[in-house]
Image (cartoon, rainbow, N blue to C red; front, side):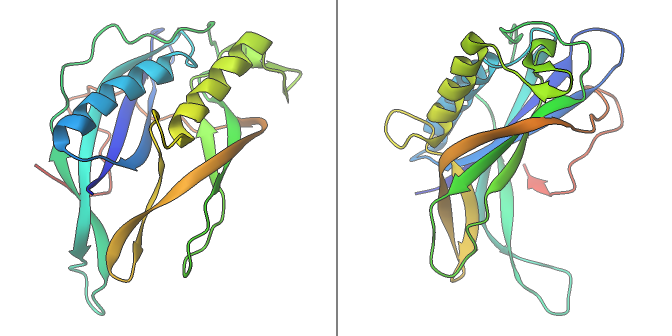
Length: 213
């Protein structure tokens, strides 16, 4: 079954400071069409735990495959990305939670993985950005109950195998791709994450990873 990487491009709605961030998740899907539908569902799920000071303005789907590094010596296997056009243009994807005045604040989320023989199972340290100012008090994490439920529902969707995203990290094992599934999360603490330039500039933000059209 093919593996895909779904990337959301999120922009700060207020004019100042002009900034944005991207967020990517990976899973498997039977066809490109299913991946396109999953992209739209992922965006709507993410909006439920995103501040209304942020807008998901774009999306990118990449089909993953095994390739060979062209930087010798020695050559080695790498994960290649091939672009899959999303289903629709993205509009009206403003977050559904409270306002944020400080766009660089995030929640550190530890995501545990299912063990796979031969590769490490170190948890993913995910910076959850685009959060409301009401999620901390005196620099300590204090998410309101309703927002906490929204966050848990989003990560339940990410980790669920049935009727969910069934997400994980795509790894190279024995020269083939495999998905190391996430199995649970732990909200650790308030943290700070560097926020980049806004998207949509004529020249600026570019991913260091090559994506084939």
